[in-house]
Amino acid sequence: MIRVEDLTKYYGSLCAVDHVSFEIRKGEILGLLGPNGAGKSTTLRILTCFMQPTSGNVSVKDYNIHDHPLEIKGLIGYLPETAPLYHDMLVYDYLRYVADIRGFPKEKQLPRIKEICALCGLEDVMHRSVDELSRGYKQRVGLGHAMLTDPEILVLDEPTAGLDPNQIVEIRNIIREIGKAKTVILSTHILSEAEATCDRVVIINKGKIVADGPTESLKEESGSAYDVHLSLKGAEYADVEQALSTLSTIRKISRGEDTDHTMNLVLSCSAGQDIRPELYQIIKQKDWSLLEFHRESRTLENLFRELTKEG
Image 1 (cartoon, rainbow, N blue to C red):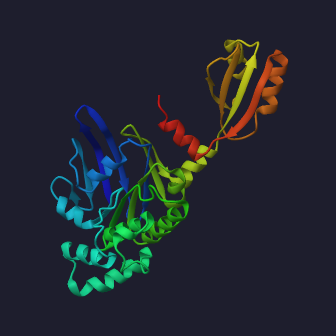
Image 2 (cartoon, rainbow, N blue to C red):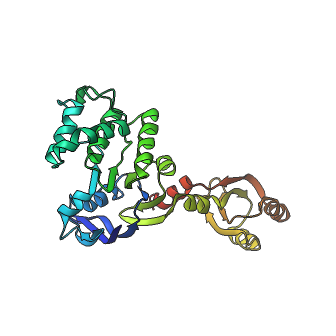
Image 3 (cartoon, rainbow, N blue to C red):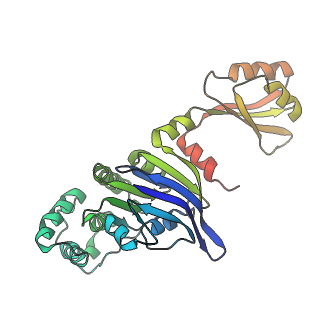
């Protein structure tokens, strides 16, 4: 339904989006993950035709962003990180106003506003001023705005930013309900939000895609391995590397900064048998002094940190 092809965006000399390509299927809830400044919002602004790319293209159904921006905007409901609300209007008046400026037929406005009211949980605040609402309810009104004309695609930029835990759960539930009938794209840097809401995630860092896959697949992949942390004294790195090469489960040996003549290592291990008994026997035979020895399971959060950390 949506195809992003070699998308690139420069702000002066800064490359915010660097040759990004991915596809989004109809009916999918896609999470665009990444740390602050990774390029998520820029990608969404280009996709929603609020900004032109430096190069590349986005196709939505049979339209592309260069030749058919108005047609694409008609297919998309967009909620930016800060909902663009008129704070001096009543919620009902605001939604009616949005329906008017979007050209929604007069006779269909009231029934549609009632549907949106029920979906977004706005029944108790319809006749209150937007300015009086909590941030959570303002986000609900923003969702109602984005959904009002019944778009095929819903784009949400950091929809739970600044909300308390209860409000986050409420917004997540609304997004999941919307996702039963719509294609939803949401950006976030909160992993738990993506895990709870999305069918698939694309992780972006410094403008580049560093991972792409269904949520469960990435969780299984990241959880299929584990790390063993070692601190040894009286050992030479070459000897350690040679001795541990006999253990096929170890995929990678990472050496940290030595402290007080102590060698600090992280052994990245593939799924399967726990290597610690064999590892301990090797250390014992070599007569190395063991100061630290523990196993750490890898999770999607670990994967995210590894893929997006500095350096």
